[in-house]
Length: 149
View 1 (cartoon, rainbow, N blue to C red):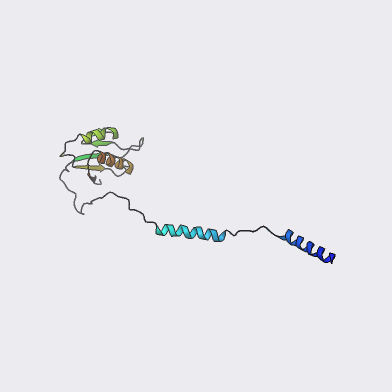
View 2 (view 1 turned 30 degrees about the vertical axis):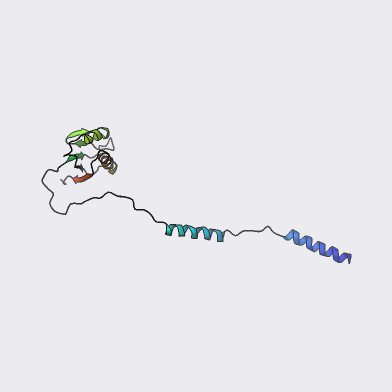
């Protein structure tokens, strides 16, 4: 009887020693995370970013009449710089000089700003001019390009 009891004890001892640590499978948790990610991506609504309204002219011959309003002409940048030379009503201006000039312009000329740029002008420079014009209270902005030679 004592041998039977010792056999049971040794059997239980080997079972205890054979127990392995419990493991967690990460696959179901990763599946749940991906399903949540997909759910939130699908159910999220994005607000449309306000853009710039551009009214393109109808196709045809370019207008020969002189535009009304202020005109900023931006030349192609030189090899030494990234910004082209800016002429505001025939006078060379920098970004810092442009805001006071636009702000103090007569009201009948402040109705519209026409940006006439050459083909190699960076968009960054044009957008800076547009921001300065908006800050100065000019709401209408037109674009013009020079005819190809």
